[in-house]
Amino acid sequence: MQVPVYSLSGEVVKHIEISDQVFAVPFNQAVVHQALVRQRANARQGTASTKTRGEVSGSSIKLFRQKHTGRARAGNRKSPLRRGGGITFGPHPRSYEQAIPKKMRQLALRCVLSAKASDGELKVVEQLKVKEPKTKEMVRILAALGVDSSALIATSEPEENVIKSARNLPRIKTTPANILNVVDILSYKMLLMTEAAIRKAEQLWGEGLPQGGNHAPV
Image (tube, rainbow, N blue to C red):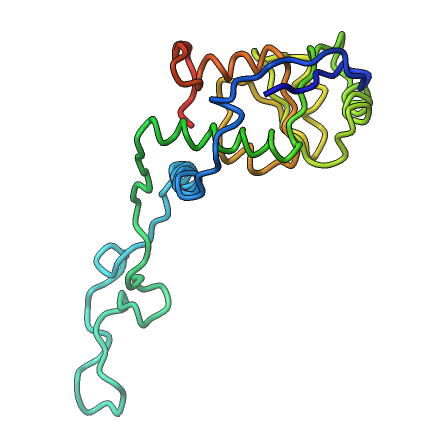
């Protein structure tokens, strides 16, 4: 597949060939959905906690005698029926972690990358470097590239000036290519990648290509 490569002024400077193994994969909705649910579940802390009647502090003495008071019988003040008592069937700390095979995670990532490419929501820039961190400069670059909605910017390596220039823009996020993930790609309308980031993605997730390098799980 051939895609145009843009300069920071928005002009097409050349066309490059990108791997069909990464950017032209048929969309597998079931796998993408499973990867999305897994990633969101793994992001949950699972620290919500409540106390049962056995864990609430307080006296365990019976509030009043059982009979001849004209009132409903009652136990101690730790009853779930009373204010300050225990919680019935409340949440307790647990793990929401899910696991899916590595090949499925990588397939899901290739599917969403391919969807961006086929929908015209992937833009490749020759390089993305700014001399000093300025939000105004990043706004100018995005406007020149025709990015008028939310965008995910992927570079081959962390670029400090790029990160600082984009961090105050509400609908823009920057990330190194090796930690691209399904949730981020689906959460932003446009995917802006440098040419080096494209090659990094092909190296990491292309079938039959080297899988080396340190990268976060999809």
